[in-house]
Every structure is written in C-alpha cells, then in structure tokens.
Image 1 (cartoon, rainbow, N blue to C red):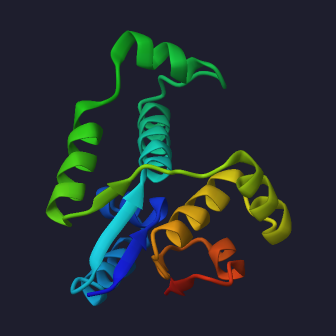
Image 2 (image 1 turned 60 degrees about the vertical axis):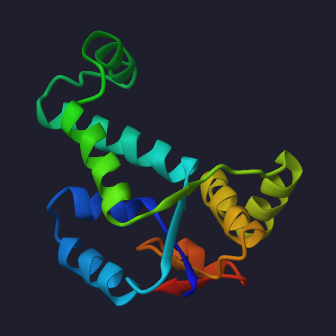
Image 3 (image 1 turned 30 degrees about the vertical axis):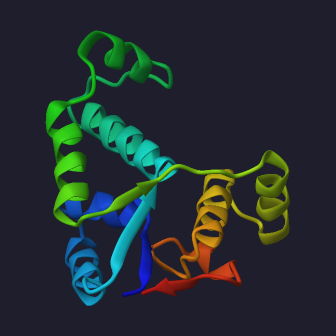
Length: 150
C-alpha cells in the first residue's frame, strides 16, 4: 500500500459539484487501494475557500475584510465543517501536522517557484515519504520528488 497525498482542489471538487467533480472522484477511485494523507495547510485552505465561496454566493461577502466579520458573527457554515470532517473520515485520510522549517520553505518556494503553502505541502510529503500527490495544481509538477496525478 502506497502513501498518496490529497490536495485542496481535489477535496473542494468532491465537496461541491463543479466541472471537475467527476474527474476528482475518478482519481480517488483509481487510488483507493492506497493510504490517503493530507495536511493542516490543505484543511486550512479548504475551510477558507469553501467558506469564502459560500458567503460570496449568499451575497453576504461585501469586501476583502468582511469574511472575518462574517465568521465572527455567523461562524463557519456547519454543512462545510461537517462535510470536511465526513469526507476525511469516509476516505480514511490521515491529517499530517507540518514540521517544516522556515528556511526550507523559503528555499523550496524560491527554487521551484511555488506558493509558500505549496512548498509546505511538498516538504511535508518529502518528510513523510509520500511520493504521489493527487492535485489539479500544475505547480506540483515542478517538484522533482513528487509524481502528480492526473
């Protein structure tokens, strides 16, 4: 059984019906015999993006700083929090806590031209002997120690 990391965009496209939902489901099916992993960075991104898109759809999000106010006043939508928790449980995903040094993240982001969160994810995979990532993010293809599906 191999270790496979699941990125934010895969989870998002499973939780919400999009043009990539079918493709995301197929990828998870293709790798279902493996052990799934993700990280706190991914969960952070997923909760933030899902909540922001939800409040945009309800037209409650008025400006760049209004999401904080909405979260203070209304919290995170329960169906999003429950959806994330249920998805992680259903797929038996282990959530890794990153143990990445600042300098390693900066060097990896700079050398491979990655966003900081993608560098953290890449280094987390490397430190946990994970060589495959399921992601729709083309940037991961620049990481020499990762195989990207699709």
